[in-house]
Image (tube, rainbow, N blue to C red; front, side, top):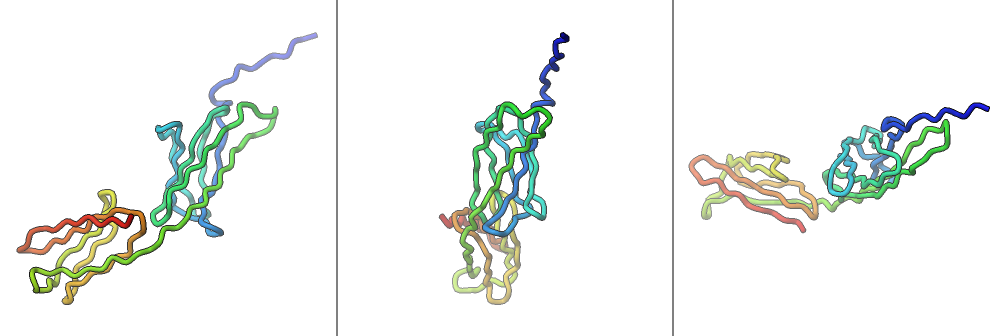
Length: 173
């Protein structure tokens, strides 16, 4: 009798697909950022498509954390353990469903003044994590309104020619 030939297991053979969907209730969420983590290290990234679907590659026998994030929603993490073996001839896919809870929407209202004088034409910039979320110029009333989310931190920067720039921290936690 001839002994069966064993193929060496390569790292390519140990890679399997991790397919997932990001949703909020029954609604699929597009453009959500998805991270694949081992401990504190990010080992893969994806973004959900218009159907909320994403694809990552994982290794058999490993443990991961999948983290989904989208503006206006709480971050969700799921632990995933990939089986070490698969039935011969069977393709293995690991599936993950990420159901994100929406954050409460809030309104940030303000009026730009110097003493009792209302300032028209002030540039107001709403910033989050160093990135501009929205920018407006105040009308005659000097007023501005932004939609923001609960449990976030923002910077509001007011700039007007002839005045010092004003930077305010707004926390909704």
